[in-house]
Length: 148
Image (cartoon, rainbow, N blue to C red):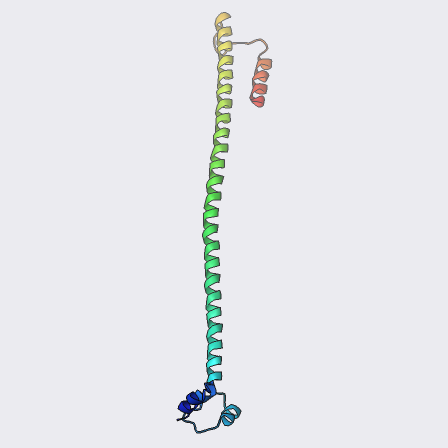
């Protein structure tokens, strides 16, 4: 057997294993067809290429997954910050509107008390009450409304 002869002689090349039972010399095998070691090398190169592709695919999926997860959490945090700021501004605007409304109601009450007091003092009945400088007092109310 050829392998046993090669083992005894110390020749452990891959060509000795690929020629087992073929009855051909090493020169004939190398010239005609790729030997077994070449086939294994091609298969290993293909396997390495596939493993590189799979590793690239796994790393790409991991990167995309990490990006999507961080985007979702970042968007949620941004929305929460925006909503908190919006609520703060809305509450300030609401407070100012309520304060202005209260000021206007107080001013109209004071004006109506002044008109009623004048009507009672002059013994006039509604609608026959004539207030001196009525237009100027109403303009003062309008101006107060614009400034508040």
